[in-house]
Image (cartoon, rainbow, N blue to C red; front, top):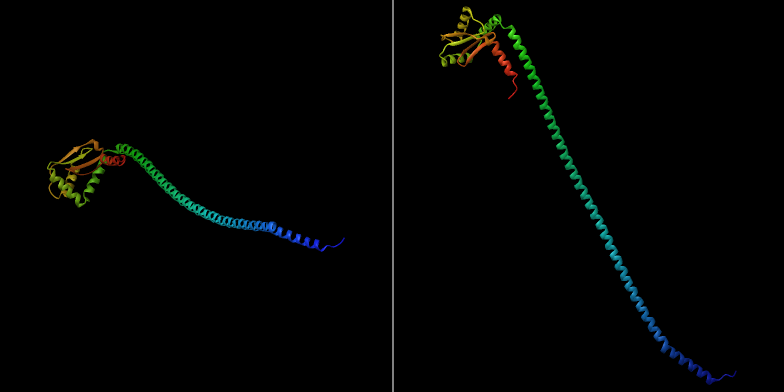
Length: 250
């Protein structure tokens, strides 16, 4: 094959034209597309990084809110537990106070009931004793017992305190009538004289008339009365005192 210089030059020119056309019509548009595509990719990467940072910031805020909510929940639970403990303690204290008051009330009722039963038993015992004493003294009543009671009265006259002696004088002044001496059995002259002398000593002077009265209700003994003043020893008065002791409280 024979080399042709003109053909070689024309081939080179054709190649250069082809290169210029390719650079002009293909390389530059493709390069522009590549630049735009790279810019778009950079923009999208920037947006993705901003979105990632925003997501991390939101996640951090969310975690902080969760932590804050957990702390608030723990604080609320702690406050609730303290309130429950205080209320439980208060209710327990009230319950203990109620129980103490109930125990005290029950003890008071039991004490009152025991006192009432004891009082009723004492009253019954005293009533029985009163009936027994009445029967016994009624059986023992007689002139002999009355003489002993008169002697006892005369002995007591010698030991009366000054205020009772003054009460006798006041009674005699306020009651100008006869001085009354009652006895269950008739009194002989000696007894009447002894009683008059004893009363005269107590009165400190002359006595008004003495009225001696028989009163079988006395059972045995005497009763001396001058107005509101009284002195004596007889079974009726003693049993009356004993009976008043066994009367229930009003």
